[in-house]
View 1 (tube, chains in turn red, yellow):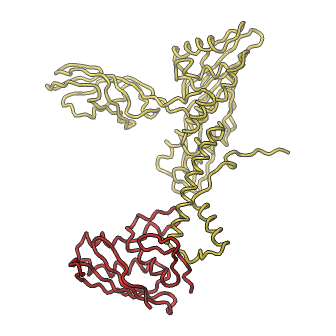
View 2 (cartoon, rainbow over the protein chains, first blue to last red; view 1 turned 90 degrees about the horizontal axis):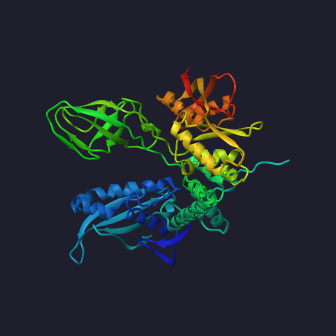
View 3 (spheres, rainbow over the protein chains, first blue to last red; view 1 turned 30 degrees about the vertical axis):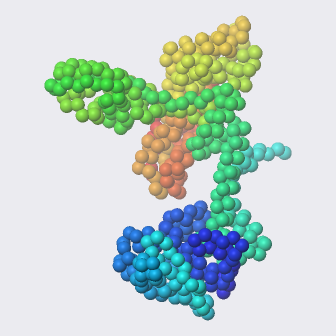
Length: 138
Length: 378
């Protein structure tokens, strides 16, 4: 299955740079967890109204101890809305980074409809932002 | 063979969905991986944004075009209720200002049967007509001591005919004033904003006003123009000439009744000043009111519970828009009922008008007014 070519876009569009293959899906999943529900407006796409969750906002609202328990299921539910995804497995860990700040690390294993294209990646979630750590593997 | 071209069909904005689909079509033809795009992808978002931006520009452009065609602006106002462009073209192109809705201004007399003392300023007190559920507030003040009877002038809280009241229909004091009771109230009329059809007709009638020989249109234009007559009571006017005597009989009416003697005098003064040529004698007469007694049966799904009231209101508007010399066909009545109830949610609706038995044709001196209406669901 081809996942096409899309403009490179995590938190902003990188003009002149493109994502291909699994990277397209990985970035699409990332955008789903940094877009508050209801902010994606569309007059032609019915799915826009139910698109996205605001992970930093959620962590800020419930606190890190509660968020680390709930985020895996929240994120799994959101990512399964993408019809390219067949299963998601997420392990959430509460860590303290080098600067002494608390954050949640999400180790994500994503199985796509095309089993040969499954991949893993890691996200770092705080009450301020979500960051993509490393790259998509394999 | 000629065919009529509908301006509405020629001038319509492309929808956001159509523009988006056109963009995707172009992307597909140049080989972009359109089928791999998903909700939230940046390219999809850009296409949607462009479609919305272009649609917004199209709406503005079509609006400007409507401002150049009276019939197009009137059709749009009738279909959507948005009369902004119609009012602009009427004012800019024809010098006709739309007649805005007016507020009913009744008065009410109350008595303080208790021991309280109330110093009332304008706007302090609200009264209500329990029959229509419409409210009115006072525009005059006064001091209501124990045992005192006082009359307040009121103004309706909402403009239009919905706040029209007959004598003694304002029967409830909404503001808490212990011991104070409503004794009586006066009748008052509120008029609806001029309909798109009426405004369009007045604009077309202005062309007659340009003639130095005073054709029928000139009399009718003047009679319906509150800027010239000083009255808003006249909504229908039809001129009839008597060639043997040089008399012109103008038959006038309001939306559902004759007009006051004061309004008739004002119209006569205006047509003498603005429309009557030399050697012609105009007469202003009340149009003969022809009550429209309509009996109809309806059948369908999801018919609203208040269908009878809705039908009466819609038929009243049809009558008010029919001039002397006009016609109301069975089809007009059925279409009015059908359109009204479908807009209220009815489906699979059939309408059958059994009375009147045939189309009603009005002479120049006649206008339709509401009669006995019986709409029955079967």
